[in-house]
Image 1 (cartoon, one colour):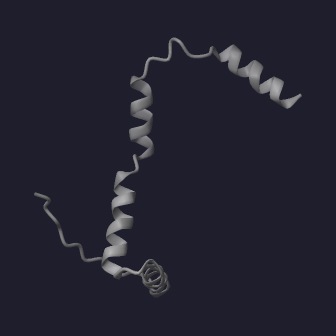
Image 2 (cartoon, rainbow, N blue to C red; image 1 turned 180 degrees about the horizontal axis):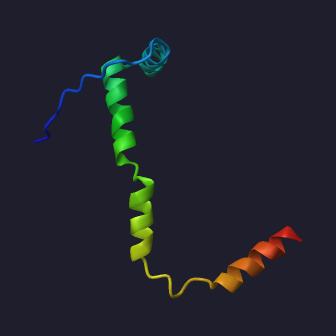
Length: 78
């Protein structure tokens, strides 16, 4: 069972609201449904801090060395 929460968003600029209404109409959906989908996409995207934390936990021992990376960047500039 999925729990659904109702959100009320205040102080949305008129031009932003109008753009969202137009995009919802183009998508053939209600404004509420359109914004719910967009918020779900936003919530699914990791933050920069989450990405950095995940990268810190990865073992990079088998990856290229700093010298290899610098050499490849230099080769690409020639």
